[in-house]
Image 1 (tube, one colour):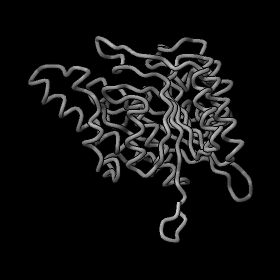
Image 2: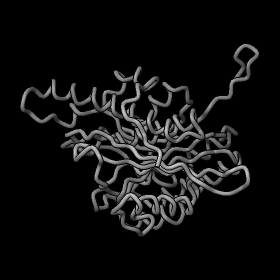
Image 3: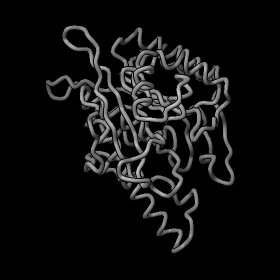
Image 4: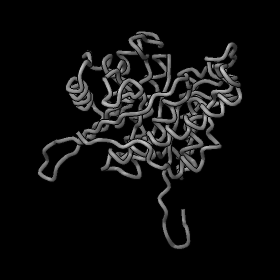
Length: 314
């Protein structure tokens, strides 16, 4: 793109996620914030639902692996299959995931610098909420082609076959995940005790660094994130999108990237909870509709987040 005589490199993201008519999950959670931060976002909607499945009712359609391939073929026929990033989240179908892997591999052949940001959504708190046959696909096919991985503790344990009880365990698990492929791993939440007490949850991150002499090391960070007493949907999708954006702006500085990512989350969630509580009225629990992320209202925070949470370098 010519901007005056300056050639501006555009950054283009292929985001393969869910779409909802109303509310914010999947592509709805990722697209607007990425666009606000200057990314071109091409979205393939893996499902099209009326709303997220936390509501009493939902209706809609699911994209098959073959239909995904048809859309990608169209992009390819026009020779516009050049991407800098691929972003994926929740999927519940093995053939769809395998097709995603095929597409990522082909896009990486076209652009060796492509970065694949993968949120390996499988479950939480010790329970899987996707079919169990997705685990081997993630472990053996998806993770090896991923560059940035954002599992929670349970998903990291599933992928490595190791339990995390201590920070040392978590560091070991992140190193195992590096060995499987991704050079950046963020454990988005854990059950590790926080130094600030039980109102905080601990997140950890690790970025592989190749030293000038060719040896490997890593930057590891720890964050204490204030807990919020409500169930939000779409926050994981926002997290992965913001980590994509902020690692792009701070490629060798996981600390800053994570601080900005978590701070965006903090501001969006704070705005959402105060709106939801106001709408629900005193002493009433907000409904799923009232708890939809206040995304548009948070535009300024997304563009320039005041740092609300500091990361500690381990």
